[in-house]
Length: 209
Image (cartoon, one colour):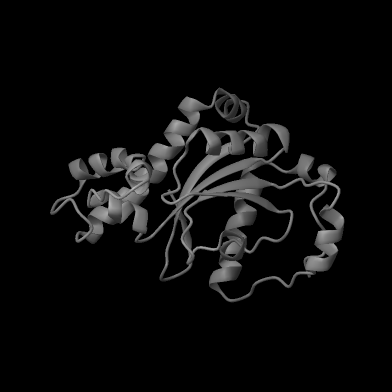
């Protein structure tokens, strides 16, 4: 039974590697249908005065990837930043910096997912309202995949889409380090790790890159 929220004292004992292991073990519970039971009332009560999450996850908005559920995390455990295509921008970077530098999180996990609709749209060059600007953030991954995967460079090519999902995660991590001196320094000092993975819609498993 998960009925005790993370305290500052507990958060201070955590390491980036221990937090990543914890999230992946939680994902294993999800895959195996053995989610922990949670006393939400107790956690709500314990977190009203503050929060000390162990990680921040940057994920897609996709309804098939409920982050806390697939990682088997509860109230107070993790921050979650969501945007279609799980890329960074100034607001996302500020959120990640807050999570780690201010609130003490030990891990940044950029989590893409199989058959991402935003990635597919970017692969197809979709233009529609504000979606056009959103997809421009994913185009660097599309261009990189075009050099690495044979066949058509559009969403009809499943291998191309899969590679673009992976490249988008990797390039996002690179840009986080480039654009956030705060997070880059924290990682260099081993205070945090910035890692990436892809969630498989079929199996429910998060595969680390």
